[in-house]
Image: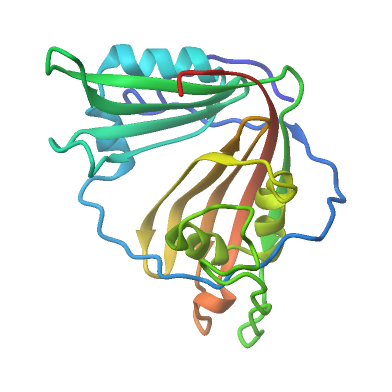
Length: 245
């Protein structure tokens, strides 16, 4: 691992990414592949603007809980009713989420929860997926919402996003949850253009494990979404304790 540094702004108020130790090279190839769903673009605010809309004390608390930053995102919470944003930070110490709420005095507040990692458990693996222009997408064994993946308990939308990823990334994200561990939290985020996503994030969090993927997607000239090039880093960490719900 590289030298340690705090969660500090790369631009005003934004966490600075870093990397962790390597993941084991050979995980069991038993995860279902899912059918790719639609990935629409159109979020009115990008993650930087959304992040800066959240109060400094909330951002500082997320930094404290997550530790040295690896990745982060923020986006509008459509359930907030007032256009506020939620935020997710992923670091060497944990995965932390801030969600807009209203307290008993009807004042806007943020509820913060965190999956705190067991020291030394965070590992990563790079997935560099570059199929040729006319390659066929691997057959999906678990279409969105299908009974072939009942243990995941994810929404059809989540499975559709997962299905866009390379098979190896799908496998690495799902493996800890295939034996029945319940997925307690799941979010994703991406921004960019139809032919290129400059930011892509997807995570699954359970009582024992967190998996997290971050990277970019490129559809080169002559390619389609089915043969898009992905450059991802997939992470896995053991959960030592949870804060909040």
